[in-house]
Image 1 (cartoon, rainbow, N blue to C red):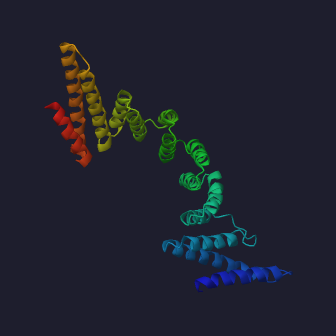
Image 2: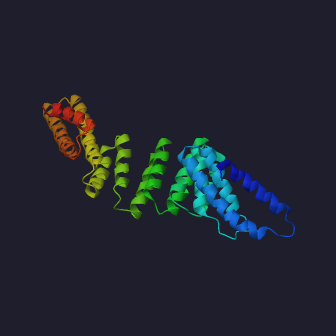
Image 3: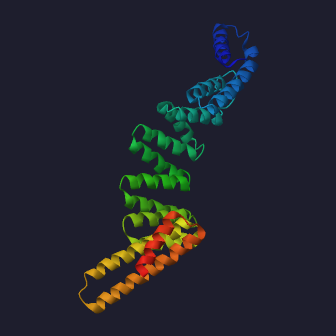
Length: 285
């Protein structure tokens, strides 16, 4: 059967059933409906692969309509519902996508569902609704790391760093061995120029994941920035003895920065790390 003939067949079956007052053809239609539903799903998959997302949505919805027909006596296929939601999302049909995603979210189909629902709210500039989705989903999915990090990003974007840090603290209670949580806490503190708090969290992350270049580089950044601040502090000191002591403290901080940046370089010599390492070495000359 050609693709467009699927819709013709569906309309014909529906019309025949509507006119079948004595239920004479219902038993004959049931196996045809099973076949038609499967054909619509295959057609939807093909259209999705071809990036015809609106067409895929239409095909999947027809498969779902047939599956929900009382004649078939089958439970709703949540995988099929997800396919409809995913294709509607890809087609940027936000209202339709949200409708299907909300149902899937209520049944806790997958932790990916609230992320899609979050983005569909953002697409129509509903930031409050978007944040609410993630906040509820975090507890439903036991502080899944992807959900936590998306919600933290959402809060930081809204300049709610305090709430973001509190969420990460709660996540660490549930998952103390997930290194991205203290790493993210450290990054927030870096942005706030709270370098000592940043170092404490980054060191915790580094202990959990010693082979991550970014954590080591971030530690180097903290010590480097602290060294720069200490040098600036020394410029305002009038006592020579205090000046020398402050400069030595700055040099020690630059030494720590160099240690962490060299560790990062050994893991992966990124351009950013190499550039900062040059700056540190200049300070140490």
